[in-house]
Length: 198
Image (cartoon, rainbow, N blue to C red; front, side, top):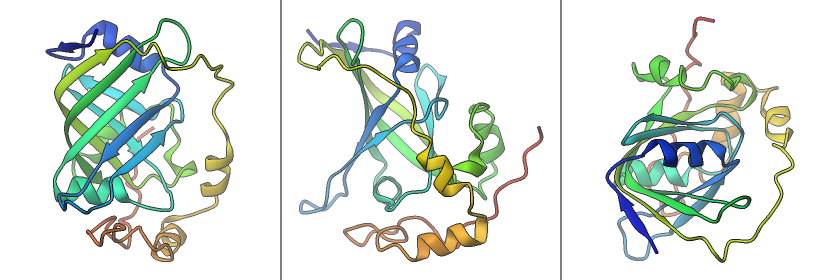
């Protein structure tokens, strides 16, 4: 029932953009390393850049496993599943990299997320993923669930932070500068938030 696609088609893009959340999975190279699986949300924080490239905003949080794994080996899988409407599961298997605030690509990438006020969420990186395999499957066993809306807690929590206090917050967390397995994570202190034209 599964099908492999040569690229992100218009139909798949529409499916991605209709989902209120997705999941990311990464792992270190070490056989005994810790596999990481994370849910991602917030409307407007994901973008399809072209037929094989996607990106999402990496906000403040209590760890940086995805960043650490991508810095080490680049492997990542993204997954969406339909909780409403026709059943479907879509995975993008690919190679990703974290683009940090001081990267010259930052302004161009940030422009793909016009509906997000990054100052409210402690934006620390933009994750760019190049698809190597795009595959969907039936999703018959995924339950039907109703989407009520995004939570406002993340924005309310991190809107009160500036670059300095956010760096201090990250420095106080055990698994930000280094992963659970000791891999380099988020570079600290954070570079200043780039000034973007409005």
